[in-house]
Amino acid sequence: MTKKLFVKTYGCQMNVYDSARMADVLAPLGYGPGETPEDADMVILNTCHIREKASEKVFSELGRLRQIKADKDGGLIIAVAGCVAQAEGEEILRRAPFVDIVLGPQTYHRLPEMVAQAARAGGAVLDTEFPIEPKFDFLPDARADGPAAFLSVQEGCDKFCTFCVVPYTRGGEYSRPAPAILAEARKLADQGVVEITLLGQNVNGWHGDGKSFGWLIRQVAKIDGIERIRFTTSHPRDMDDDLIAAHGEVSKLMPFLHLPVQAGSNRMLEAMNRRHDRDFYFGLVEKLRAARPDLALSSDFIVGFPGETDADFADTLDLVRQVGFVQTYSFKYSSRPGTPAAGMPHQVDEAVKEARLAELMDLLQDQTNRFNAHCLGLEMAVVLDRVGKHPGQMIGRSPYMQPVHVDNVAHLAGKLVNVRISEIHPRSLRGEVIHSERIRA
Image (cartoon, rainbow, N blue to C red; front, side):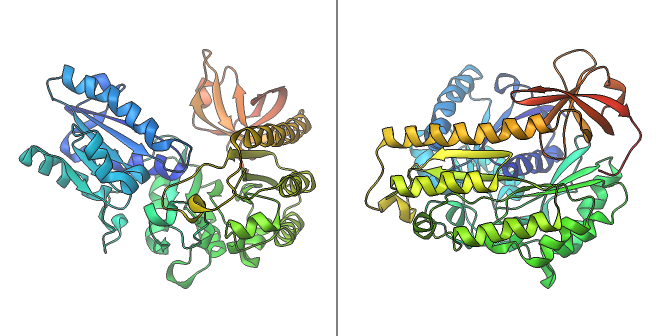
């Protein structure tokens, strides 16, 4: 490796997976990992369009990279990838003409060709098409980077929630064929991976080869070496009975489910085009907990959606109290150009959004704190996949996705171990190893 590549990843786990695969396709060109943009020969910003002011954050970072490129006398390739690139490719080149490559999420398998084209032509390359051929057919074998790995099984979304840009930036739903997914999972297991997270914008909508997502989970669970399975992000409408049953039948499937609801008001759910109401969601939760009594739930919430009243917001608080969530992601509604909600009347005042978000987050944090406190003294399986701040310290994730710090276990890096939770902290737990042999989670 004679050249350095620095990738800055914004947003979701799918982008984390995509960033790793972009590094994989560039490796044959001689690119190895760089620590900073200053020491890199190529920088990729892998962007996300979900968060507020996403594009402006990208342009701010591009301003910094422009100076770094000037300091290198132009000897730096700058690429913008991901959903902001897909949505605003031409605007990026207009506002930042020093950018060399702009590519959408469906075209990064063509990065080597784009790099060569940019070098030959001496101008910018824009590739935001939705190619007919699936990009996964052209990617090299996945490479593990530790004991936990992401595995993309599905992309795109057909739900068209009125606030969301995913159908426009990632395209319609595409399910990878089961043989390709299982082959990749086996290769990851051969490289020492013990925990796999199956990824998709609507992951439980996977229907490759006419099979169900529950079937896929059962097949992954049969692979030797894979001890833990997770998946994200799911949609309530695609949580079918077979998948619910899998939560009770597959011991390797973690007792933690991210099931976004977005709001607790039927009126808001209809305006968001979520295709379910609160009673449907309550019914799912009841079925899931019947199948797996120790299941913990996480969710997403949007406050201040156009037209949201105090009564609508009260319904959201009520749903939160009834369900009880252990982790959540909560945001003020912010307009995304091109989405139906952007043009809706009765946009909510910013101060009202702020107040509602603060109240919701206080309630949700209280639920998280109570769940964490319940974990004190429990025995949990933890994959030690990251180095901590202190000598010999490792960090892993509990079955419920809590960060767990364990001291003096550097010799157990990459292992699945049993720990007893000894301390509770605001954003993490501390544990002590009980025994270190591999176990079923």
